[in-house]
Amino acid sequence: MSVTLTLLALRQLRPNARHVLWPRIDQKSCLKAVSAAGLTPVPIENLLDGDELRTDLDALAAKLSEIGADDVLCVLTTTSCFAPRGVDKLLDVARLCAEQGVPHLCNNAYGVQCDRCMKAIASASRHGRLDCFIQSTDKNFLVPVGGAIVATADGRHGPELLAKVRSTYAGRASISPVLDLFCTLLHLGADGWLRLLERRRASFPDFRRKLEAVAAKHGERVLHTPNNGISMSVTLTPPEGSKPAGSLGASLFVRLVSGLRVVTPSAAGKTVGGIPFESYGAHYSGYPCAYFSVACAIGIADGDVDLFLRRLDKALAEWKKPPRQPKAKAGGADGAAGNGSCAAKDRDLAKDFRPNPSAKEFVPAAQPAPCMTAAPPCSVEKAEEKGAAAE
Image 1 (cartoon, rainbow, N blue to C red):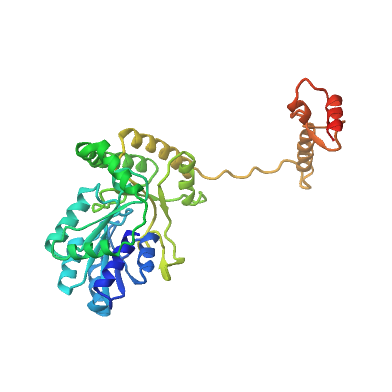
Image 2 (image 1 turned 120 degrees about the horizontal axis):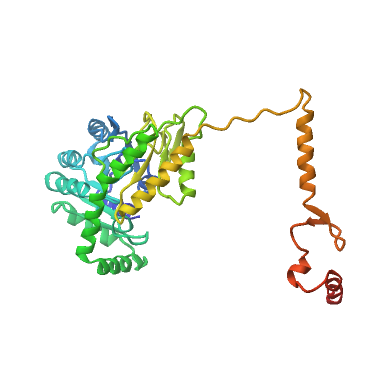
């Protein structure tokens, strides 16, 4: 909603511009934010650089020239995202926007906790054009979902846009996100929050090293994504006849592991916000392998990492296990023995039931009659008399 509000404010400064150039990131909220503002998103496909997906600057420049700078409201880039996508090339995009006189917004969803994202924002603001950047409070400050911060480090273009955002806001929103953030920061203090950031930063290489060991144990590898300091991805190579890749996420979910994202590239198309995509969810059309992504986010502890990796190890072993072969039926060609086995099972099942003399239907023998459950000392006859009297 904060991205939508910022785009609506920017429309007042550029009323004739209707297009938003958007290096592709497969999260529906980004497209919905643009569409909700009544604008036309123009996805720019990423480049595959080894394992990592990076911004295609040539395609961005070509599309900007094709549409025309006057018809482009802004370029909407992204810092924090699921691997194997890396941080957008903010500095190069900022320089292009400065040359063409086009505003530049950045979706910095959970990038405040990552020094790499914040350094990219600072560099783009100082040496190019980055009008403002937007981040979530819940993803960066350990508060409930519902708040966001719109900020700028660009003294030339940012203040005017922020003033327009303030004047565009209609009011009447809940104060809960502000109170949550205020109370949390008072509790942590500046030193406490900085310690959390440092612990997350220090945990990332250790998490990656341990994840590589677990992946190698099961014949997989961690994808090389040097420009993503929060998220990591591991390949998924299903053996012949194994379960689909998506079942791994379900297996971990029942083990109380949430947030893991399994992606299976497919040629099947999907339309989101009126725009067709191929292999939606992978940030790229035709990524060469299936994978799952995990994140080393603020608040993580060493015990959390070790517990997750133990459960991941078990889930991968279960997922890699070949399916059981159906047993051959015993007996002759006419299947008489098989039918006999079924008849025996039916007889065993019938033993669990007996007729209840006080009722017209059969009830399981293992369960007491309803009257005995309600009043243990009461006999069946007395229960029937009480029931008749009640009627």
